[in-house]
Length: 205
Image (cartoon, rainbow, N blue to C red):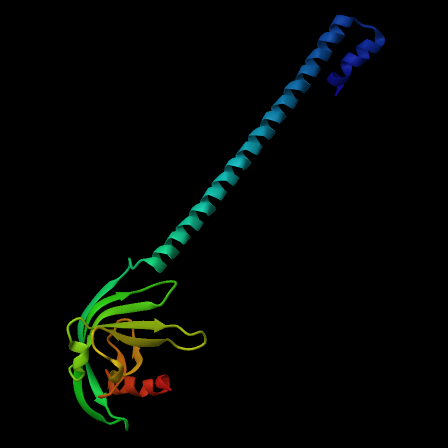
């Protein structure tokens, strides 16, 4: 405090202009150096903020680009898939819910899971009691249709050179592992178990 007032006290009392000028210059230079240091610090801080903002923007853009790529691949391509090759034993039930026999469903095709559209199976889905399903060039497509507020409603449609309208209902209750099945056909209701058959009555309605 006293040092900062010294030049002005000396000037007021007339004690040597050179000494007063020298002290005042040192004080002024100190102020200039302090001001310059503060300016550099402020500029460095602003530069750091700009770098952080730039990194944040690049990160957000990268996330958006990755998300859009996933959406496009999911909608346009069938990259993720699973081969299914199995024979599933099923029971045959008549309209009164009485078991009338046993048979098997042969499944040999590809299951395509999706995030933004329906999951799909495409390939063989044949039954000895339905010869049309075993013909060469015949393929079944099963779609897991999601309805808001309701359970999923899978549908089965056949493609090939044969007329398939007489096979029965297009409704089929099937899980994605394709080992729990209830299928309504002209030969009766096919189910992997009586429990599955009982639970599917409400599904068909």
